[in-house]
Image 1: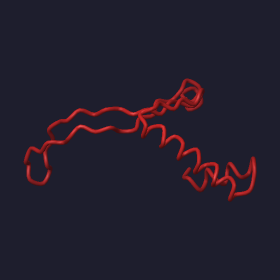
Image 2 (image 1 turned 90 degrees about the horizontal axis):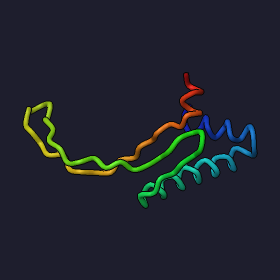
Image 3 (image 1 turned 60 degrees about the vertical axis):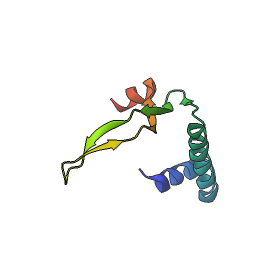
Image 4 (image 1 turned 45 degrees about the vertical axis):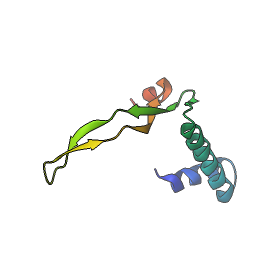
Length: 89
């Protein structure tokens, strides 16, 4: 399922396709904005979006074999909730 499939599914249940697209985009934007602020987004039964911190590390350039330094960074993380895990079993 991609974003347009999700919009279509929401539109089937609630409103027009245009309104559903706005809703989906607003939900994604709200989650993104919260993660940018370093906040956690919990959707009970579905899962939790959070920001994980990766430490700086050394890596190897596959083509040259040279060791390079990869800086520390923040990455989005998703932890599925119990209900989602149970539904996928």
